[in-house]
Image 1 (spheres, rainbow, N blue to C red):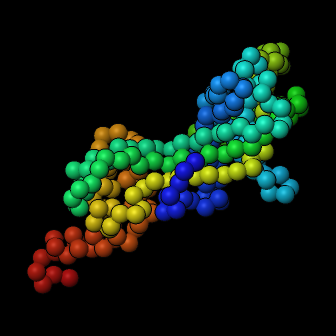
Image 2 (cartoon, rainbow, N blue to C red):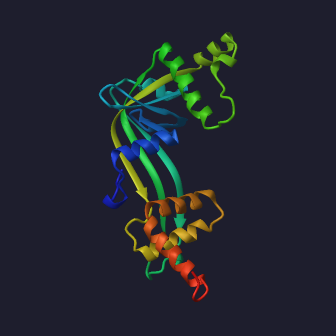
Length: 227
């Protein structure tokens, strides 16, 4: 992934983002063309600190035949994204751009054993069911044994040993405070959730600029001689 230095998060931040997102697109090359599938996953860490991305696919997915434990695959994890109009900047002569968050994990992928797959299914569902709290979590124990075994036969567990972590959080970090705040304010007023999410991330990334702006606004509204 090409990432200019001012958009590049550190390794820990990239892994945290990927783990919290928990959904991405896995891609491998079959010798003639790339094969990809969108899927949920979760991260664990081996004893030496190596990240591992665990997931599963349908048994008939062509990716299964490519999991040789040696060839590197790519897991692309994307967050919100938003278009930026040049009209929103304070400075002249700007161009259209797109702001986003994205992390790429790459490494060899191997097949999981049946026991490892059973653990993966329970771990994956537990993670995402906890997102729905205070709902009582669903567990595989709610299924009849026969039905669960039938469903497990239709999938194959996989795990990536993550060898490389690349991230790009493009949030206009290289722009002046005036342009940065103008874009965040414009995105925050848009109807789509992704634009508002990017605006929130921008405010979190440069809070002092917005704090000064808020203080000045309060001072302008305060009655003369007031406290």
